[in-house]
Length: 171
Image (cartoon, rainbow, N blue to C red; front, side, top):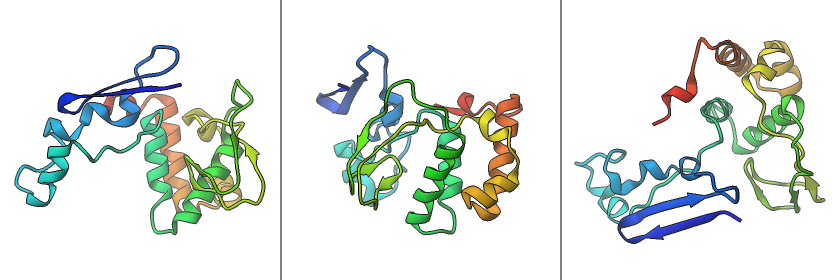
């Protein structure tokens, strides 16, 4: 089980079962109370800042966050979820464990599932190298990302080769 400990003043610690710090995945370092992510002159956000609300879940890597952001452009949420699931199915590495069982209609990292039966997640989000080893055409044809294929493939190639170090951009 994961432990999230909320202390006075909106200080939060987050620890995984193995003892590792999972706070960055919850954007805890960028908590609203820190003042660095909310404009000081925006009265509408005063309550949010006072209550230290406004965290956003982050993916395990910035690469995953950027790819998922690209997949959200100019499309419906259902299409974004489908593209993400197809990308994971096609290019993701198998999980070392059996995965988790996702019941019908339950929320997943990809959104609400519309499937009739339970399924087991068995693959991780693809690495930059896995996507880079392909080409834009399979992304267009099988994953159905359309015009996003070149951007996704180009980002994967540059990240896998070390030209882009996205993880260095994390704050």
